Length: 299
Image (tube, one colour):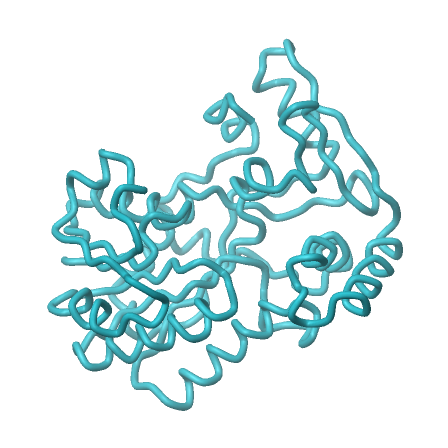
């Protein structure tokens, strides 16, 4: 089986590639710069197509030729998610590809219209493809991506002071999935007998409250280090900050207030889902929060 991973250099694309290699599959990459890949991935690729721009249809046509499945892990920017991904699915149509996993790793973005600017794009993409394409994409709900919260977002985790910031009660759990587990779930989904039927997959690695984070971090560090909590206010405070951000920055300024979308809507349960498909993929061993901290000593 030959799998195309579009956006392979990203923090979801790389684990998907490694998971494919572990299953003995061939992988072709599509991204802007092959040099952004670690050697263990770069050296095992069947091929790589360089994307000169988000609208490089020629590269997409070359990349989709003769592949059996496509995993689109393009960045969650509106023009890339909506426009580039739509161009890629049209290239998949021309190439006769039936299995297409769309960029979708988040909470249940089909709920609460208007609650998140990028979720609205996800919903719009899924709707447009459903009425205009013979391809039935796979979409996956994963909750929060653990690596994003603890490695990419200082609004949530300060790696210098080991402080986790949040709104609402310290006992409220958030659903998380690690990038490695996402890679494994994606490969299970695209190699399943019914993969071409598409649909929604609901998974997670673990649930953890801010208080759970403190306990797991200390345990993972053998009691030698402690995480701290920083409550930024109530859930209502987060809602007020979100509304203020929207009023001040408008839709085009969404990066300035997106963090408040999560800080409000996760504890408000606006997008919650049940990870019912964990049982469907027993080959995936769920990473625990403590394991995540042990495997990432830099966090």
